[in-house]
Image 1: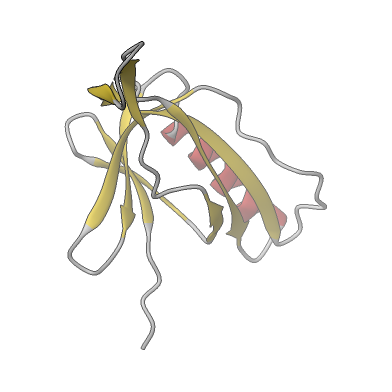
Image 2: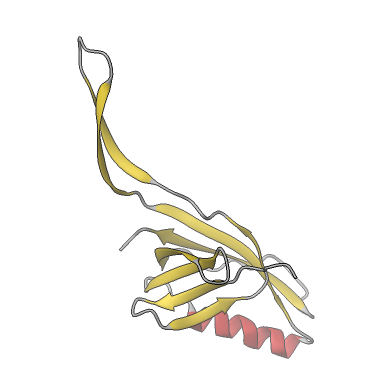
Length: 133
């Protein structure tokens, strides 16, 4: 049986807030290091002074899927009310059954819903600022 990783959103107190359904594209795992390189004028090489993690836009697309329009609008409302802009969250992506990637995130943009008839499914794109708190 193949493993399908879950993308889950937790509060800053590590309480599960939302599990994103059918995530199809995601730009993590990603490592972003901020640092300073100092190179000598006459010498060979340089010194790298490592800083902290650099912020980056973490985004993914997915699909809300159900049987009818009313159930679909309920799912959209649930997503909108669970993932509030400007709130601190921990986003976790499973890399195995027992291990997860974890990022401190804040939603910085509106959730994007491409045009759709909304009869049984609706795609969504959500963007967070990662390593931001």
